[in-house]
Image: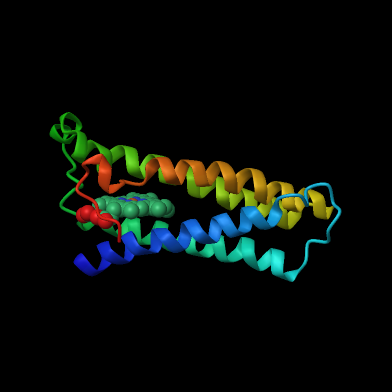
Length: 145
Ligand code: HEM
């Protein structure tokens, strides 16, 4: 439990960095001025893989964490409600958007559209991830790592 929790906590940084790298890499290329090469594909793919791994770790935690209580009582406690409902809901949407961004980029015909798909979907996904993370200053009892 503790090791999984720290893996989930620490992996957030790798997820965030990977997504930021994919986004930054796509900036300025949505007009099709640059070819979408192997490096670009890999940056998008690594961000997707780390995000999915984090999602799976979270899913396991969801069923073993003491902070997830399957009871109506949890809805009256802001910390329990956060982990039962809010954290998972926001993250499901964020992960779905990043997955859509990746697969649209894969399917897109021209290179500008590939970059645009990564840029837009990963950016919205990133904003949701940042909003859904229990930051230490929010009193959810979570840490930095
Ligand atoms: C994919 C993006 C996600 C990110 C970036 C993320 C990030 C985090 C972070 C930073 C914590 C605090 C860990 C700590 O220091 O105590 C946490 C806790 C937790 N997350 Fe996630 N999470 C994600 C997805 C999910 C999903 C999809 C689920 C559930 C299906 C989930 C379930 C949990 C649970 C249950 C805890 C509380 C663990 C505990 O302290 O007992 N997470 N998450």
